[in-house]
Length: 478
Image (cartoon, rainbow, N blue to C red; front, side, top):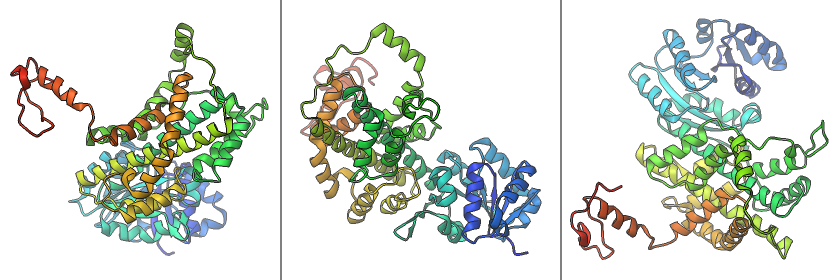
């Protein structure tokens, strides 16, 4: 029997779907699961794809079934289980074999594992896989971080299984060590922001304009035909128009208003802060999910504080306001993506990855959760302006912001005056207003720091103003 081209460990939902995708694209794949019964069950259920699947009962049998140098995808729970699985594999591996973590790993763990193997003859790939269960089965967006040589060994298989956009595979080698998992982390951070902004617009339509779920769904379905066309807008329309099979009510009205999170959104915020890059829309989205989880506290606070004492939302031209909501969502979306790409640009310099921004936008156009036609425009913008310091100053996006700025301003002010929470939309507006202002207010902060600290500050005319007019300062500063 011919050896497998690649191996996969972990036959949970994601691992099983990825293995079936690999086999369906004509690649022979060896599979192993800690529970042997699951391996046999998976093989039985593979049907016509069984000819391209090599089920293995032991690690030794599994490794021997793969053509050297052996690429082995580890698709299990992130964290310690991955380290444990690597230790179990190592006695059976040979020089140039490749361990591939395809889970939602923290990129710092990926860098640690990459460094730990660099002098062993083995190598490591951190592979971000986006698209969920459906993407794993039929074509995900794949972000690869590792040596270029290890990428070349797996390129054929990964290219065959990736999502396709106009004939282009949505997979790329992005750089060494943690590059792939870092980009996947920021992808998820942008996803958090995108989902939160959509939810805020839904809240304005539901609580401000008193529209039903079905009516709101029609609005989103209409928006999906235009510049907001995307997977998230598409599924939002479908969810809002779906009915609960038990009660017959709109499904969204019977779902508890508590959103879970797996950690990648939080990681993206932490890394943005570590790099000193503002990612306020992503931060607002992560914080909003945190507040959503505090259901009991929110209900108790409403009894004590009540809702804001404001008049009902007053909109003289309903159609015009809904158009404003569409433009406001587009503007805020630009802010979230601009912040995400700015974080990646800073990380690229910090970790010497040389991340290819147009390529990242290109491989997100299909297969992943944030796929949208909007990414075509980002690809074009970074291709034309590869050294752009921020997406919002590229000609195309600067023009879009000028077109949508007033609508975002009207929507945020209307929502705030109506007592409707819009933290992500408001953060995007604040980001734009701060970023575009040549002279801000941090001179006062520097003056305060000087007053309480022992260090001076830079004057606007560039002259030395050490300690200012009040001498050496009174404290340590902040």
